[in-house]
View 1: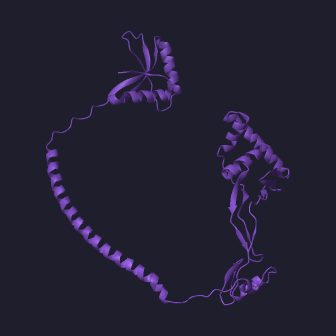
View 2: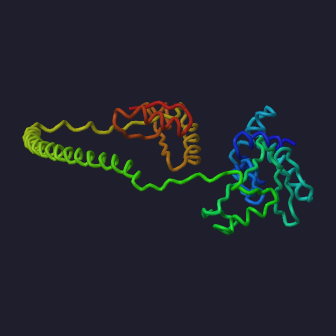
View 3: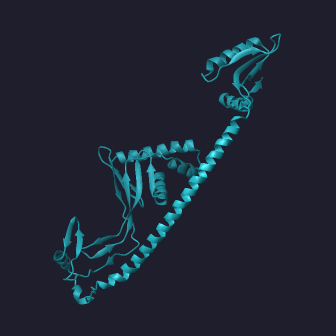
Length: 320
């Protein structure tokens, strides 16, 4: 089916795939696991999980549109049809197998369960044998239980594959000389002492620079006060030009009856954002215009004209 191909392609390319009205598939990575009983390390891998929460992100409709060469609106109708067919199959209780992903199946109350397909493993399982020394305290965790000391050794030696680690791996002598720590402590102490001296010197320089900056700021403040006084004596700037009233001409007629009819139609279909007026421009009332009164500064007349044109979706002329 088309939806199965969509899930396969999108899931392994983007790590998740949301199918509208069905649910979301996600690829999750599993880390390596150590089995203390079998003394093996399982390699990391991937598994597919499913949840019934979903969001229509539009990817499914776009994928169908590209695959079947359809416009997006028709592709959405096709997507709804494919999803309804999938849901009808699930409602019958029959499983829906998605190759390479897993199997969907709905129960009697409509809850969808998912059984993932086992992902291929590209790395082999590693067999390891821990080194157990009787004179050292070992600590491991089995499930939620922590084992220490002889309990660990007894647990691991219960494995049939276990061999005595002391025979294969000889103990290495441990040196316990405390004087050798001074080889590390002495250089570190010398570096810290040198850094402290440098920090104190830098701090004194910083305090001297700060005092110089404060003095310089005081001088600058006095200069700013003198400049402010000079600016206050300048003559005031001329006022900004006032707004002007003008009209946006929507339609022009030579017949008064037709103009009044068109005006009544526009007022009936107009929203509260537009206020039309009917007026004549010639002295003998031979030319009638439907206009929209406007007011703005002269620099904004072009902007107002474009706004009216976008609002009523037709070309208009300005009449000053």
